[in-house]
Image (tube, rainbow, N blue to C red):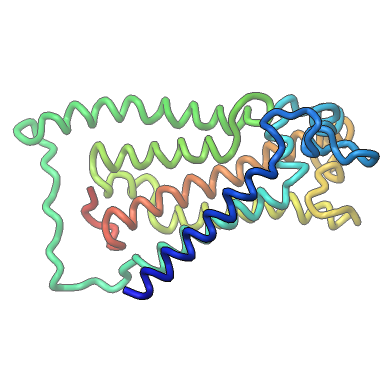
Length: 263
């Protein structure tokens, strides 16, 4: 009882401090705020620099992708690592590697005409929809640096397509297409792809994630296009990790780590 009182008191005090701090924030959309106007008498704000120079620096019209994958590439890379870490943590906690002989096997799904007619309708519809979802997801990844989209969005759509297969049919159907070893491998490969684009510039005495140094390797006309092409490679790595981890989390949570039966 005392623990609940202390916890509630800590939440109330912390909330009050945060609400008090909000009063010191600039007004929403204030053009003279430090975020928009920079420091008075000093350098201009980062946001103004991004708006004015993104296309010149990267040849990427999507300012958001350029900021995420280039200007603050360190942060995005470790965000992807956090996603992988979350997936591995859930795997370590839930995955049951030893088979319990006392556990009852899940009943096989009846796919005959005399079985669940709703499953037949849903299954056929999803078989048609899933390829379209995956094609659009690949488009979102490939065009994420030129139009709205990117690796996170495309990866979520790809992961959702495999989850849809599991929900409309069975988890074994989805695992037949993206098995346990495959999604673990893809999740790690995605991180290595992102980190690889960071380490390659180090070989020519440039900074980590300095994509411009890859102009010769990517055979581009100038460092700006090298940065643009490298962002596509980075987004592919992000999409692979997000897709694999998303499906891995669903597969383990829905089966309590046994990867059998499921929803």
